[in-house]
Length: 249
Image (cartoon, rainbow, N blue to C red; front, side, top):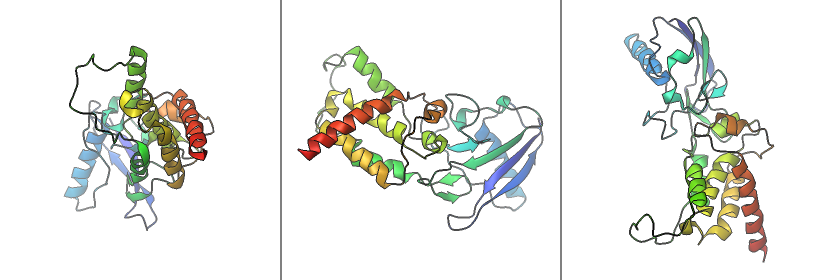
């Protein structure tokens, strides 16, 4: 099929960017979106032109690196799917596709479609970890965790930190990402040692690194490739209030 690609090109974070247009003939519908960009880059190399920079790693929907906004939607039109797992059969012959980096104040553009998402790492560094010595691996049935708690922790741990929730939010909030990381530890014995200060530390880091506040648009839940539920945000807010009270005592 024939596609017209409108791709954001930007030399670096200090220069202004612009949309450049590329026409692709005979695009195989069984290609992934990134494979289609790979072919485009191969042709640009043959023409002696600068290739399009974009992030990728596992290409299995696990790492979250392939963060592209496709026709204004983080990761593209298919629900619960990362860009690398999006296939060209989701598009039609003659379509015009706009490809841009994730747009958020906390995600400055480094080059073309690559953004700096280290701000998410800073939230994790503030409290998204367990510092206690958990010892060697134990038998699966040795830790007293209810099935309900285990299921919730697994659902929260599914977050891959891609930043789609931030890019979709009109306020550029990282509430869903932060909530997933906090809720994961709430339901695990290993996470209890630092529970009293974790939410306060992570929410404070979120605010300090340029993310906005939640206004209940639910765009984050709609575009999350791992379908993290927005209800986790309310649980995070409860933990945050508790942390504030404890910190004030």
